[in-house]
Length: 249
Image (cartoon, rainbow, N blue to C red):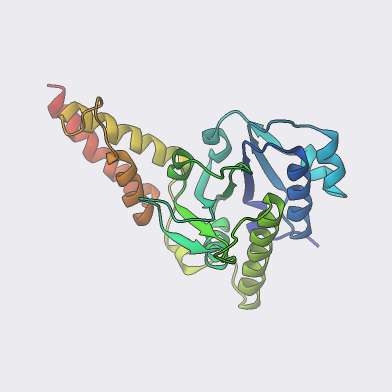
């Protein structure tokens, strides 16, 4: 039976994984829930026989895994990136439960590429990595012991994604109303907008590059909440371009 397109559009991204066994176990967790697209950002050891052994039947997921030099490369072409974290960060994006995040991901995956990002085993995701995402997802674990093995976290999120898809199918729908109503901006579109915005603020004197503070981080949080559509990003860049014409006179 052909796998639903929504799952085909979901990629699991593991950033700077230190133990190859966790990559193999994550691949197995993915395949049990019908997810097959694995992206690895600078893994410490891959390919590796330990990863192969832990995959236990999911060797095809490992064989087709995309190894990327940067997170930007791993997120290229996506319309939504969700970061998995155990704790709320200062100036963080909107944080959802794994269940809530999976529902939103399935809704947009009917329209375009969606990424679910996991950090390294020891320290999780950096603030810079979180800034590349629009939502944060958390697993509501025991608050006194929130530590989860990487593959276990992948398994939980993969399960929630599958359940969200099955729930949608039970309603006789293939996509959510939100997905129908918008053409989401791509990761590249949004990143180019941030670069343009920062450059324009520097040119106008609003942002001092020698003392930037956390201005761009705050603005990323603002636009992540708004999640502008493709056309809206184009409008915003048009406004910036009109400002550029005056500052470059």
